Image (cartoon, rainbow, N blue to C red; front, side, top):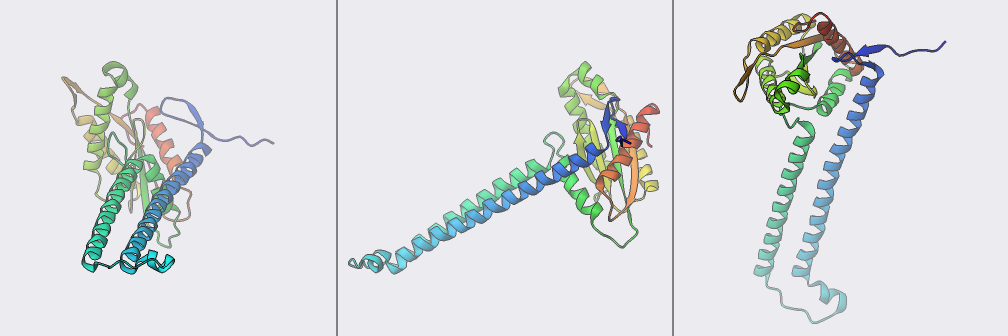
Length: 270
């Protein structure tokens, strides 16, 4: 007997396999870990390299290495000048290290945040969920996940253009961040889809949060140039206990509820 994988549907009605979610999470986690290791290796090698250069230059000035190695006539050492040159080398090295750390910090920000909305991106949230959800916990605390999607977003892009669509995404992101709590994590999950992680919140409270978000979006007047548009969103909510659960299962339940909200006519919470 052949085992067949269960089918789900995305917001456009296209079929996809549930295992795809788990595979995506594994891939994103591997990419995040590789990036983090690369940052650490760059800094470590830079520190070691500057340390070796500084040590060699300092020894050359203070000990007169050519005289020790080759027995040449020692040159008089000007200790004041040597200390000044050593201080300058240390200062310039420090500037390079600070500059490198700032560049790496910027690269890390680009890797973690969505350029359009400045929300955390899918890669960062995937790693965060795997750490928070699968970490063993003895408590019976719950967390909730909300997956939401802009209704008929393709029609907005087709009618008003992709720049208008980008403006809508930025305004939606601002509303999501404003309505949710400071400890909640809002991310752009992909395209016109957003995911919200709500720590220490059961589905009953999360449904209320999703409903407030739905009302805030539907009542907001979205603007782009001379246009004023009305936008609605559909929401799928799920809650789970911390510890021992694959994050893909949590996401699958919320995604299925989002699909059900779409099936029931959009602009609703399930």
